[in-house]
Image 1 (cartoon, rainbow, N blue to C red):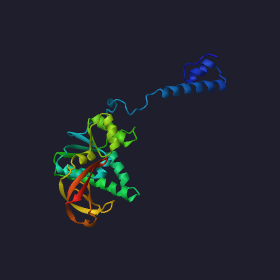
Image 2: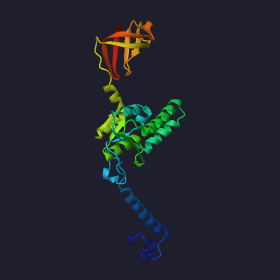
Image 3: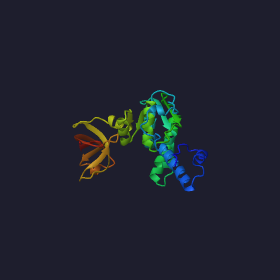
Length: 261
């Protein structure tokens, strides 16, 4: 039988004369399989495709672009940080981040629902603030639709726009840093501004509750640092003067031990 190269049905019929229906079906099936194979050689989407592939995603207007993660808005501390004047630039909030916060706000879990609502409220308050004129908020529709994970979307956009990434998510921060993105982690900032205290220093604190060990009382500094005070169980709800006796470093920060003066 003569080999058929042209997939055109009329050409095959002319070449075969009166083809056997079974042979004709085989030829058509072979051509279909060959064309499907060509489709399989098409270049798939790759998260690490060159940034030049995303030509339709324009850089947002503004200076010192800071891409905002969901965790920052749900956390809420961004508002007093902005109002303090220590942060400047353009906070860029993609609509897919707002969608994720809305999903959290619609949760059946009361705690998640409260956090989601706080996140939406924080967005509105940061947009409306006039205390820090050096901070602007821009909501953008840009998205990388072929990437499902929000974290990967943020990292790709940060690389594309040469923007910093603002987060409180440790894992996202690590992922971004590995790919060369500058990360601003609010938790790192909180650790950096904690009071520097040395043994022998005197402090006035309020004992808020008993400690785990016998006769201990527990109080907190204004930045949230815990101080465990010996023989202060009976001082709960009272302001006392204490002398720092020991500083213990933990993965979460410093823990101070003290005694009543």
